[in-house]
Length: 82
Image 1 (spheres, rainbow, N blue to C red):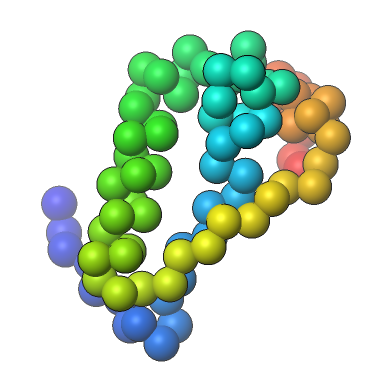
Image 2: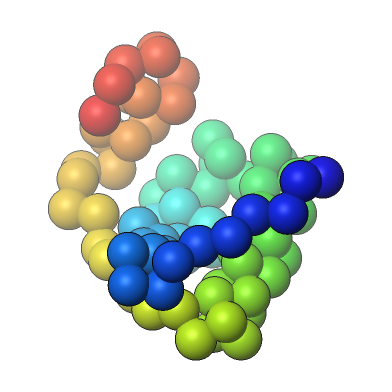
């Protein structure tokens, strides 16, 4: 893998709704995404990514997605763009 470098003044990480409705077992869209999220280790990879940003002193933030769960499900099942 090629090493990547980031300029701290122009680099940040934004995790959009990384849990609750999407990545938690009780989430509204978990039935649609849970199997893939678990099989690919999504949550663990997000933790690694966040840890790498913190270790590098780069900013990281969490933002909530303000979409009805039905829109997210439609995007996942019908190929719609949200």
